[in-house]
Length: 321
Image (cartoon, rainbow, N blue to C red; front, side, top):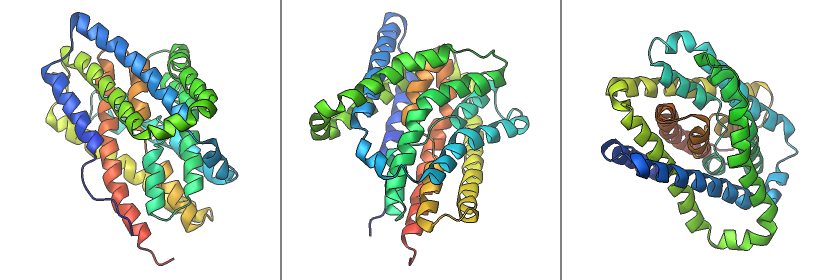
């Protein structure tokens, strides 16, 4: 039986390395402008490759399970934001306005794709439904997340609603994604052959965006505003959100009559948030050094969800039926 090892996620360790690099050697002046333009180009390439790699056949295989997909999407884009807003009186007394903005941003992000499917597979859940739900979450997130950022996240900070973030996402993320999907029949074999190298390109894009965002934040004094105690508070808030969502997805799916396999899919797809989507979207949606602060909650939540889901997947996998 295959198990995930309980160990730090390599990508998270590299992200921490980028934060350290940006903390000691932030890009400034002409270098900052050059890195910013490069990161914008890399984000476009990243979403082009997302579109080119997405298998339509795998998505269609689980598409008929509409009750499960609606539940996962409802948890991802409705329940999570409601929790973030409901906890506002408590959270605003514990963290700075910028960090609370990051927590709300975490709540409106789509689910992960690769890890949701991987955990569902290890736990012996409904893999085809997981592929469909996770993929749909990421595709719809290109539209839904920027709208929710304008309606909920920025409105929660007293900023007026604006369609500008939505238009930026359409131009910088959606158009490359659609182009990748349209060209998939022509480049599918090439994409499959170089999947390992393309995964490294994905990671490099995210690492570059994190370096640029945190470099700008460091120049503006992020570490004077976020001491170690604040990081621990963010981690505890992340644990609270994850616990609430996992309890709701587990017992809610049982009350609604889903099978054990479907329950596993709902738990892993509904409780997770995508760092891979969150980082480039933050680059587009939040200006200047604010992106660095906004990304702190999702980075901590990302590592926490991986560790918790590793243990949970092993427990599901050990069941007798």
